Amino acid sequence: MPRAAVLTVLLLGCAVLPSCRQADPPIQRVAFDELAGAEEPLLSPNTSGATWQVNPGGQAIDFGVAGAPPLLTLACRPVETPPVLRIVRHVVGRPGAKALFPVIGNGTISRFKLDATLAEGEWRWQGDLPASDPLLEVFTGPRELEATLPGGGTLLIAGSRIPGEFVIWCRAGGRARPVESAASAAPSSAPPAP
Image 1 (cartoon, rainbow, N blue to C red):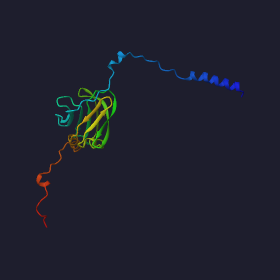
Image 2 (cartoon, one colour):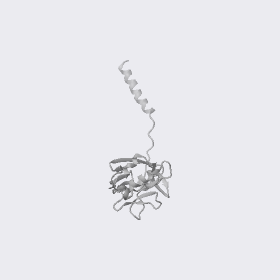
Image 3 (tube, rainbow, N blue to C red):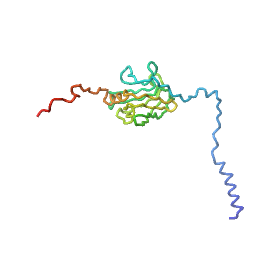
Image 4 (cartoon, rainbow, N blue to C red):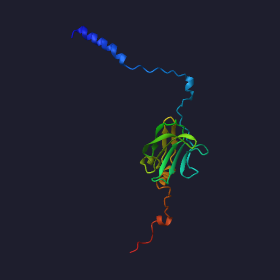
C-alpha cells in the first residue's frame, strides 16, 4: 500500500474514533451555600473522665461521661441461641450507610461491620454478632482501647475489666459464673485420706 493511502486511512480513523466515544456527562455546578448542610467529619470526643457503666436495663454497658449520652454501647441478647452481642457507636449516620469500625487494644485488632440504623429515636451505627465471635476478644483484656468510626472520630477508652466481664457474661447466656468459696479455694491442710 502506498504511503499516501496509509496516511489517509490513519487520518480517517482518527476522525471517526472520537465520534464513537460517548459524550461527557454535563457539568453540575453547586453553590457553596448549598453545601452548608453537608456532613463534616466529627472531631474525636474528649473521653477523659468517661467510664463504663451498666445500663439501667442490666443487659448492656455504656461507655461515656456520667450524666451525658453514651459514646459506645455493648448490648447483649442472652436469650437468643446463640447469644448475640450488639455494638452501638452513638454517632449520627446517613440512612443506608455502612462502615468498618476498627477497635484496637489488648494485643488485638478487630474490625466490626456496622450499619447506620434508626433505633430508639436516633440514627446510629450498630452491628450484631454472635457473642462467641473471636472479634470480641479485643474487649476481654484490661488494657486501653482505641475505637475509630470513619467520620465519627476516635474514642480513647481507658483500660477496664468491665467490657471483658460483660462479654464473658453474654457468652454464658446471661448467667453469672459460679463463685468459689474461700474454703474450697484454699488448699486443705489435712493430709490426704489413705
